[in-house]
Amino acid sequence: MNTTPIIENRIWQPAFECLPRPQLLALQAERLRAAVAHAAKVPFYKAQFDRLGITPEQIKSVDDVRRLPFTVKADLRSHYPLGFLAVPRSEVARYQGTSGTTGKPTWVAYTKSDVNNWSDLCARFLVSGGLRPDHTVQISFGFGLFTGGFGLHYGIERVGAAIIPLSSGNSERQLMCMQDMRPEILICTPSYALKLMDTILHEGVARDSIALEHAHFGGEPWTEDMRTRIETGLGIRCWNNYGLAEVQGPGVSGECAFRNGMHIQEDQFLFEVVNPETLEPVPEGEKGELVITPLCREAFPVLRYRTRDIGYLYSDGFCPCGRTTRRMSRILGRTDDMLIIRGVNVFPSQIETALMRIEAVAPHYMIEVSRPGAMDEVTVHIEIQPGMFSDSMREMQTIRDSITSAIQSITGLHMHVNLVGPNTLERFEGKSRRVKDSRKLVD
Image (cartoon, helix red, strand yellow):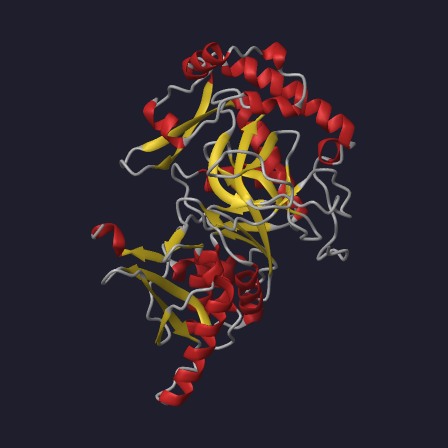
């Protein structure tokens, strides 16, 4: 456990974040019981409760969450658009959503109380990651239905800092804003931070012309090695946070000054980690699928939402920052992103971890999976750092061998490695798309 704070240790709502553990568990049980009673206003849950014989009075402790049915994204889609709404539409303050495979968004709704609560939850992780009222923040998240832009916007306002709501895209404009307005905080996806790094290097921008100190990243999984690359490249501190629209948006968890995992806002969310195949709980400290029950949502309650995200909860006690809440790991992958290669389960994050440990590798790659015959084949297309790409076959083969070995040591699989020059692979302004699986076209 890291026992040295990266920055000043600050807490936004100590009354909840530092609540003694017995009181926190009692609060969770009370709020879970109320959440079940409120969810019964949704026809989907009312039918489930009647079928299972569940009543709110049966919820005595947090362990009773296992009595409740799971909720999956297909349930939300099958009750499109607002079948999970638990309040009259006249009480809704905002609608947001996430794009679905059908092209229609999965809608979520918020009352005024939900929005206020959400603002404080975002303020918690922003303050713990260095945000102060005197800062200026450049938000390079999209401001459409995506919950990241508006969620962070209101959290920053709650802290009292100034906001530049620049939205995503147009890297040259983003860089101009950094230089002219000199924000100290950047908010975007980690893949977009990489794109901004490229722009800074391409334009030859002097580091002292940019005042950035911290960045808060979300919206997609990223590895610790990627954090090191971005921090070194931009000369800043990067902070991880977690959330998803179906249970609220950003603010579900985030890192503190010690960066010992992300603190779960347990007064607001009840976490489980289950085996994605058996749906049975896994021991604390073992990885599995995260299941989340929001405890205080008014407009759009969900119970035991299966996130498809893979992670684990820390089992080494509590953090020296003073918070009593449990911590979760970064997202290791998603059950629907997992690749099964010749019978072996592989997450793209494992490949990223291997690549970022090779000095010659730039933080841009693409994983291509195919089945030209009876066997799966994986080719990893990788950019080489500027100045290290060479016409020498021997030098390139040495780099290729190092990468192949690193990937095999982590995944157990041999993968083909294709080295390409700088600025060759696609850059991403939103969430990255680093896997192309053509096997789906030939199955």
